[in-house]
Every structure is written in C-alpha cells, then in structure tokens.
Image (cartoon, rainbow, N blue to C red; front, side, top):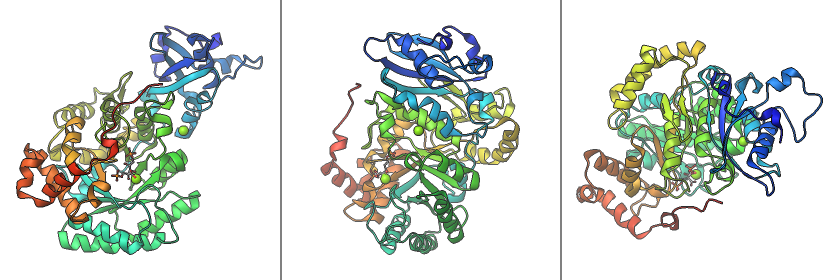
Length: 489
Ligand code: CAP
Ligand code: MG
Ligand code: MG
C-alpha cells in the first residue's frame, strides 16, 4: 500500500486540474484491490514500487489520486494532475503514464483503462482535429449519406495499374472514397510513387465520367519520419487539394506519427488506421484500454477520422455498446460514456454558438445533415478562431470497416443512429460476382433502400447489382458473421 496516493472521496479531483481515469483492476493473489490501486497510481504518476526518501513536497503534490474504488466490480478511479503531462500537447506521453508500465507490473492480473475524462481546461493544450469529415463532405458534395468507401483488395500484391483500375471501377460505380489497405506502402511490385500517379490518372478519368469529385486515402506510414513526410509531400504534389487523405497506422507507426501529420498538414484529412489495437482493446483482454479510450485520445491528437468498429455487425470483435460509444466520442460536441460525460470544447455551453450547435446536433442526428453540417463548416472558421483561446476540439469521424457488405449496411446504420461517418468495404465490394463497379452500385443501392425505409430485398427488385449481392452474401456468410460474443477473462 502506498497511502500517499490514496484520496478516497476527495472531491478536489473535479476542479479542472485533473484528467480522470477509471480502470478495471484485478489484484494478484494475496493482494487487496486498495493496495494494488495505490501501486498503480504510484507507477502511473510520480512513484515506483517503494516509497522513496527523495520525494519532495512539490513532487508529492503531483501524485495521482485514487479517489474511488468499487470492490464488487473491481473498478478504480484515478485522477492525474494533467500538469505532469508534456506541455507540448503530447498523447504518447499521457499513454506512457496511463497505459505504460502499469500494464506490465506483477501486482495486477487485470489492468484495463476503461475510460478517461479531459477537463475543458486541459483541452486547450491539445491539437484536436483540423480538417474534418465536414470539409471532406464539402469537397465531395456528399451531405445526405455516409461517405461510401472501399479498400482495394487483395490487400497487397497488385501492380499500380491493377490497383488504380479497381479504384476507378469503384469510383465510376458511384463510390466516393478509396483507401490504401493498412499494409500498403512501397513494395517492390507496387512502387509507391507509381501507385500515386496511377491513382491520379484513375481519379481524373472517374471524375470526368461521373461529374463527381472523389477522394483517395494514401497510407503514408513508413520506417522513419523523413520517409513518411516525403510520401505525404509526394501525394500533395501529385493530387488535387482535397482529393487525398493521409492514412497512418497509428498503433504500429505510433502517436508521434499521427501528431506529426496533424501538425504538418492541418488542411488534410488524417486517417487513423488502428491495426493492432486488438492487443489493447479486445473486450476479453484483461490488460489494455478500450476502443472508447483509444478514440478519445485519437480525437485529442487531432485525427480527422479513426476506425471505431462495426458494433458486432462486421468481422471484427467489439459490440454496439463499445463501438457506438466510441463513434459518438469522435463525433459529438458533448458525448456520454459508461463512466464519464465529455464536453469537447472549452467554450462554455452557455456560449450561444456551442449551445445551438449541440442542440442542432441532437435534432439533426440522422438523415440529411445538409443544413446542419454546412452551417458547422461555416462556423468552423469562427470556432477555429475561438479555439486559439478556448480550443474547440472539432470532430473525429468514425470510419466503419471490417467485414461489411451491402447487405449489412442497414443493420449498421440502425445501430449507429447517424449517417455522419465514412464506411469502407473491401470484400463487401470486390467479391461481388459482377465485379467492383457492381459492388459499388450495390452499396449505393443498399443505402438508398435504407433512406427510403424499404428493405434491400424489396428495393433489389429494380436493381440487379443489389439483388446479386444479396444472393451472394447470403450464400457466402463468413465465419466471423457466425461468431458472436466473448468470454471476459
Ligand atoms: C477491412 C480492412 C480493415 C479493417 C480494420 C481489413 O477489410 O481493410 O483494415 O476494417 O478493422 O483489412 O480487414 P474488409 P477496424 O472490408 O475486406 O473486411 O476497422 O475494426 O479497425
Ligand atoms: Mg500506447
Ligand atoms: Mg485493412
């Protein structure tokens, strides 16, 4: 027990000087939860495994505080004075505290960061998103549907020409957005710069034929920052402004990569792919952090969008409670989680602008967001100005992907409760029996059916691409669509 970290019932933790965190902790055999809670608080703030004589009055004032414990549910609330964090708005620094050594100490059998709360005073220090899905909507002129996207499959192994041809097919089929898959980089059989140039040619052709602008998200993850920046600059030099996003493998490339892109390219959509997050976030994992927590830190870091999961509808583990909550943490000006409510701006809710935006957000939450989103883009300049003094954290769009196909879109839309997200389908588009272009058409037709309030079966009577998709995906249910639930260890 390190009693210098035990402050049960201390209400001063709500004075705006503390980031609040709640963990699920199971102590190692023979230890009490209270003992281990103080060990976790020590190790994740100022201390170590034994009290040291070198502590000073000032260092002790920076101790994290265990301020609440629920023995029955193994929950521990810890308050961190956010002045101990790097003054440079640094996310990797926070995670090194709250998801660092404590995940490895032997006193815990389980230690999972379930949720965090950032006081408005802390928000000012962090970048938050700059270029958002609202800006992408304005570029694409897509206001009354999710941004409908695809990942080119096979995941890797195509030449630049073959890759670009599939992107062209998806775009002329009506799709808005294509992304590199998370491992795509500079492969010997798919030179990066040739891929970029091929995409530009394919995009110009598709825009010419459809009369609609298109977007491609380029994976700029690399071995080092110089190469990442070179790839980002090469994309910028070869693509039209607004027609590209930067995809970063945020877990394997790291938070410094995410924040470097946000700070170097404030006018570009920063697309946080979270491959590898399962090691922290799977619900059956006793050690790690949740998708809600990951999404909150991604928004603080300034990701324009992050994958938030398919709420049990697609192939990845995760359920509606966690994935939908995560999505709302990305999108809303005020979001509610299982443990904390989070206001995402320091501008007081008494501020007429914020209050009216929150109100409109509630009203406009689904269906055609046109007016609301256009106003929000217009107000963005005003918010950005205000954000210099009272940081409005603009929204981080949920990117919904993983085992989705046209026959699952309505399920997801109904559980999500808004159209304000990007969805990307890989197998769901490229496995269509009639090919990628038909796969894209089937996605749009499935959305139109949902919007009209009719079943896809009904709607497919007039649209063969959807009809064939329904037949195909019914016959080709993947294993993951049969697996449900999880065992909490
Ligand atoms: C989806 C995907 C995405 C996953 C990531 C894949 O492809 O490209 O990386 O969605 O998961 O490689 O699996 P499919 P999440 O559409 O073919 O499944 O979005 O949960 O982070
Ligand atoms: Mg980490
Ligand atoms: Mg992928």
